[in-house]
Length: 291
Image (tube, rainbow, N blue to C red):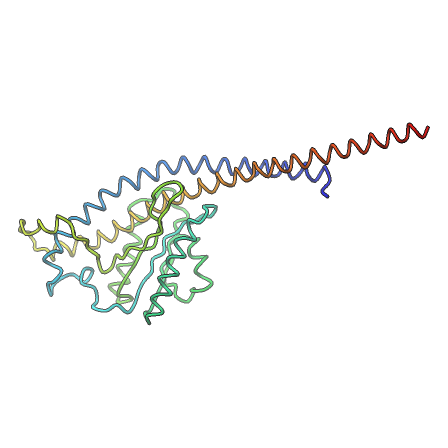
């Protein structure tokens, strides 16, 4: 049975831990508001970009002159998995859920005889994948010094992906990240960026109403790389909001658990102290009676 001193020390230690987790929860809440606003502000831009791309590709997709970023290499043999995670932990299952989705896709592709390579963004995803798939790594992007994600960060990652595509390193590239829904809900998402996946929209149907100068293919050659960077940027912003939401939730749970532990330890301490006092009283009374 722990001594009173041990119990008192443990209570003090857990109280200090609770102060830390509470502070981290408050910091995450402040960062979440800014990250959520940034992610939500980027969504209309990304959606509009997708709509414009849909309109342009409606007639260009079947052309022999269609850009390679749209038409692809003509093969589906080599896949690049771009795994976006955080640089820091203590965010619940945020990083693990992204890595799990990437692992499932990797296993699926390997079972089909595909070649797979991995590009990681963020230390935590790299750490989780390195032990089993270190031989598949082709590049890692370190954002540990970046205080606030900007478009330039996304542009750098997109350029790395595009350069590898132009060099013939892969046929298909897919982003893995968490889409922010709420503080308690982040959705692991896989999004193919090369070749471009264009969703049908009303913009595509209206494309025949316009004549483009220069032609659609020339415009697409300029817009498609921008679209890759835009999708990477949107994924980074979604990840940033999801990370803070997951960390806020995890620290709230840790704070509650610390409070419960303090209550249990305090009850145990009070019972032990009462037992010690009772024992001392019995010894005093017994000694007095002996006299």
